[in-house]
Length: 148
Image (tube, rainbow, N blue to C red; front, side, top):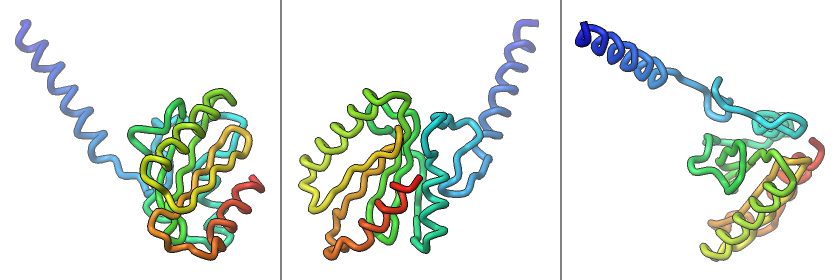
């Protein structure tokens, strides 16, 4: 009896693992289990705003590990510029997130980086590959984000 009970539990667990492994989400769209922060722009809203303005957000996916103290983060590129959007539960958590981003940029000697917030959503844009010398794309990314 114990063996059949154990077999049933193992079968159930394997079934759940297979189901979660087969679930397919579109890049930039939150998974059903992801939690967004109420009262602040959500990552998917930010990506939609950029798309609607003619920018090309690509390869956005949840970050693992996330920026320190963030509730939810996604990283990708907008017109080839590295871009991260994170949601935070509190202003204190967001401040720690900003510090973590800046510390990382110092470590990698980032050429141009900008951190902006809208409510408790953080936008971090960095031109690591020096593809954006004029700053035009970065400016567009920030301006659109700031309107949310």
